[in-house]
Image (cartoon, rainbow, N blue to C red; front, top):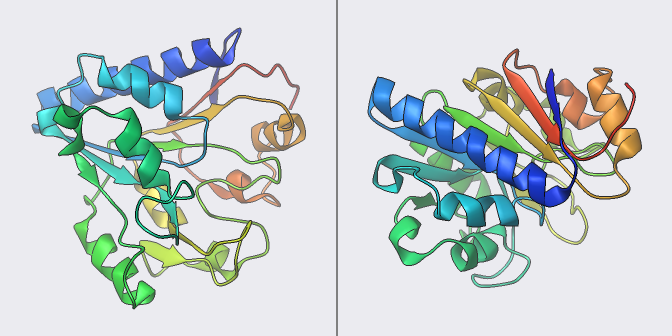
Length: 219
């Protein structure tokens, strides 16, 4: 995994936004559109804010969700809520929200899976202190799903069930961008860099992966 070490969370967000902007411009030049997936959590908020003011051609960009909590529309628990609050109106037509409000969540996963591009141009991922990425969380059967592109966690994680892209989708992306900042993640980050498959993030298999972080750790 290629690694870019920066000095602060703000610098990490700026570098991640720069990487996405360049990937988007290249994808649009080569294929006419840019298919991007963004993870939840607080880490990408600044990155999204910077992307909104960048030269990324939003009219030719589709912004999918990597994962989402099952919570009411507008809830602060929903990743979509922060995406909408962060992106100005002229960018919001690009958003492709996960349908977690559906009564049949398994069917909703199938529908969202059909809406995905054959291959994402870039997927942004985070890293939890427990080694999870997307909503591929420790000890949940969702880790073993290989026959569906989108799946539900079977148990609640931190109070909610989650909808998430699965490993095959991550593996097929043209590029993976891990953005890791903040305290409490050094052990998980060391294990990720060491290729430790005992944590969910360590099971992401994509040869074109970039880690942007402000944490100086040794694998």
